[in-house]
Amino acid sequence: MEIQRDFYLNQLIAGRHNGLIKVVTGLRRCGKSYLLFKLFYRHLIASGVDDSHIVKIALDDLEFVDLLDPIKLYRFIKEQLKDSDMYYVLLDEVQLVSGFERVLNSLLHIDNVDVYVTGSNSRFLSSDIITEFRGRGDEIRVYPLSFSEFCQGSGLSGFKAWNDYCVFGGMPHVLSLDNDDKKLGYLSDLFSTVYLVDLVERHRVRNKEEFAELLKFMASNIGGLTNTTKLSKTFKSAKNVAIGPATLAKYLSYCEDAFIIKKAERYDLKGKRYIGGVAKYYFTDIGVRNAIIGMRQQEESHIMENVIYNELLRRGFRVDVGVVPQRIVDENNKWQRRSLEVDFVANRGNKCLYIQSALMIPDEQKRRQETASLKALNQSFAKIVVVKDDFRPWYDDDGIFYVGLLDFLLDESLT
Image (cartoon, rainbow, N blue to C red):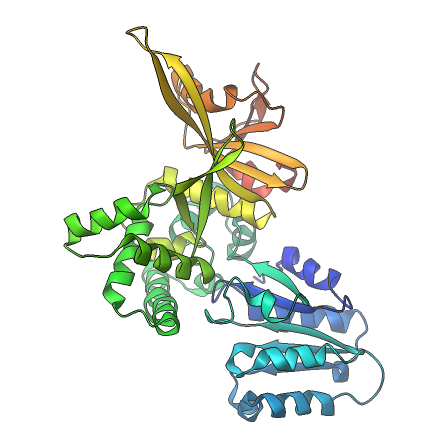
């Protein structure tokens, strides 16, 4: 079954003729080439564009090996422009061309050329790629399959789909594999022979084993507070490996730039400021995360939290971890400081959501525990508790909205 990926296709369609280079970025193998060369190409044809006015070049194809030279590539594209009508240039794996930035900037000077590119190594996918085009790039960030897309592509639904998704994640090729061993093998190879090698080579990481060990630790600690100083001490005591905090911070930034992980910063909701030094990290694809640690540590509560975080990012929210400082009187009648946590503070435009992720709420005590941080907030923004259970959404007397996990993931109107 074909996955339409309309969320991203509509962004490409909206960007037609906007005078910018449409740059499709995202984790390697998450479906960028398919989006551009299949879905967008089909849209252009259906909208009346003649095939002769669509220049498609897959730069990793042997047929186009001569075009890896930037001058030859530019001249080849120019040769395809036979009239003054609009031409659509679709370049896949453009990072294979040395000096591709100059080619793209030169194409911007041609009035009847609309440019779309993808790339799939960490050089191209670096988070500052848009600056390479001097402010003339329009980024379309592509994520692995959302839960909704996974259901569409797999033909599964409900918790049967969830059980597969929270183990094997949303890398599109996984859906074409017919057993669990093949899926795990694909994801493991993707990490070890593509992501890890790419990062080590680009950044000239001297110790590949240490770098891999860091990613294993992060995979074991999704949603946990991470401090590079404490992490350095952990490596020293548990692994007898000396890696300084600065080096660890640099390694984590490499992984962020390649979209393997994403950092959620902590935000003091009362002091209205970011809290430095400690952050949480989540994996862009939960299947890759699971493969890194050999499918061990399948804590569904943490996986669910990671999936909700990714879904919020996909929907265009900036997502932080909320901290609510409080002063309370203890049993000795002394004032004590404590901090309550809001799993996610999601901002998009003038909309703000406070979201808690709860695997289950079996009783009133657990409900009070999960909502304590939300009740401590005086703000009038929406407060949501996402629970794995299947139930009709409802509001409690404090205005907190309770919704089932599958409803939340499948219905974007809930955010």
